[in-house]
Amino acid sequence: MGYCKFILNLMTMTKLFFKVCGLFLVAVLIFTACNNEDNKGTKKAFFRYNQASGISSLDPAFAKDQANIWAANQLFNGLVYTFFLRNDVSFHDNDLFHNGKGPLVTAHDVAYSLNRIVDKKVASAGAWLFNDRIADNNAFVAKNDSVFQMTLKKPFRPMLGILSMQYCSVVPEKIVAHYGKAFRKNPVGTGPFKLKVWKENEVMVLEKNPTYFEKTAQNEQMPFIDGVKITFIENKRNAFLKFIDGELDMLSGIDATYKDDLLSQDGDLLPNRKETINLLRSPYMNTEYLGFQTNPEKQKNKALLIKEVRQAINYGFNRTKMIQFLRNNIGNPAISGFVPKGFPSFDANKVKGYDYNLAKARELLAQAGYPNGEGLPEITLETTSSYKDLCTYIQKELGELGLKVKMEMHPPAFLREKIAKGESDFFRASWIGDYPDAETYLTVLYGGNPAPPNYTQFKNTNYDALYEKALATTNDAELFDLYQQMDRIIIEEAPIVPLFYDEVLRFVQKEVKGLGVNTFNLLTLKKVQLDKK
Image 1 (cartoon, helix red, strand yellow):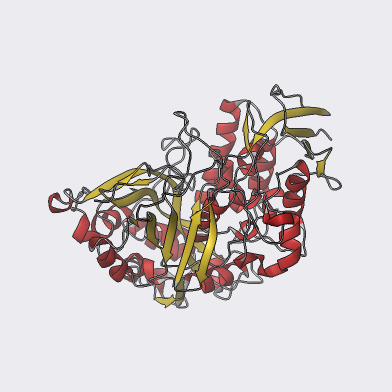
Image 2 (cartoon, rainbow, N blue to C red):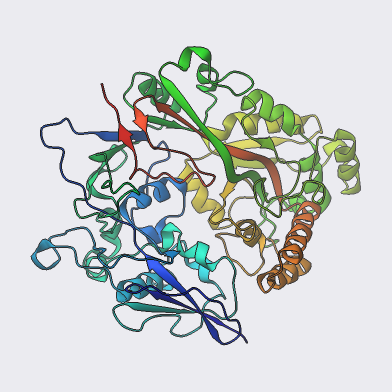
């Protein structure tokens, strides 16, 4: 079997070259970091935002959701391939280090960090990323202080993208060994900020890392702000009011409790808000969906194992109307496949999904043996308070088909755990792309993957064969065709109900400069400046 090797040289300039089946792929590793002096004599500038869902861990090995990812992105650096490098990247200063000084990062730290992700004792939520992709033995090896080697079982196009994920952030073995599981609240990384205070469910404060050394193209030292303050107000209306009062610098996304206070029905910022607020907007590599548990041993409502029932549910509500009235036209109705707009392989003409069709839905229910929903057991849809309005709408629409749908509301962390264990028959979820390749979505339904990411436990022989073939395909046209075939199988088998392809919305105070927005909705604060009057 062929394999690829990644040599990440930390110390010298190298050439990037590919050679498949027994040869090497060489890339350069850079850890971005820089230094900034204290703003003596000036008021401290802290960027403030709210995280309604809470943060469960600051250990990058458990950066499994947006809340954890956003925080980890301020504290750690991962592997970013480029043709130039820096050799003076150090960990945050910490009393456990010699003389309290953070040591330089070496290839041994890289090897330790990646081996830790796949260590079953650690039980990292990101272990699935390397399933059946890396060598069975010595997959991550430090050849010396400056050279790190990674060995794959076979070529895998998205691997460099995976290495840039927060899961793959570099951590110091000495600190992790000292704290064990408590590293989650005692993080030490190489990022632009470091943890100062964390009162769980109350407040988190990050302060500027004085040994961070990344600079802008104009040779300006980063980060520019003194720190970050994160609050954990669960009530999104209350968080909105604090934003309006100027107590928060950013409000992310929209919620039913305040959307009409900020946006017109067409999705534009209201005129009376434009003097004090900026709206940053971008396509979002995020598909919101409902998932069915498809494992017969796990699914309690056996009617949901019938494909025609799942298809009927997909046809049974109006996505366009849902987006228009419940989201002020933010996002696009998911009437294609699971892969959202924005990926090169996306083609709405080649992957046709579900649109609103009550007649077809009724026909499918009759085929399944439940004409007009008669005899079909009550369906429980599990969600969180943030999506109550959407799920209530779907519940009402499906009621027109004769389907009895009961909603159960759960805290986000509880629901995620329940879904991962396969204990939810029908659930609301979302999948945010991790890297710019549609494989990041299609892997979610690959039968060889556990949960995460395959929360529906979907298995289909044809789908799995196409997925495996795609991994070995280098021609873009052939690859996109395989991706589209897989997406059409998802539509046909209906293990999920695609709802909409989301958009990134960031409402920010006028004083915030340099925040920006991106299609992965990754929060990066090292370039932010606060022009406080």
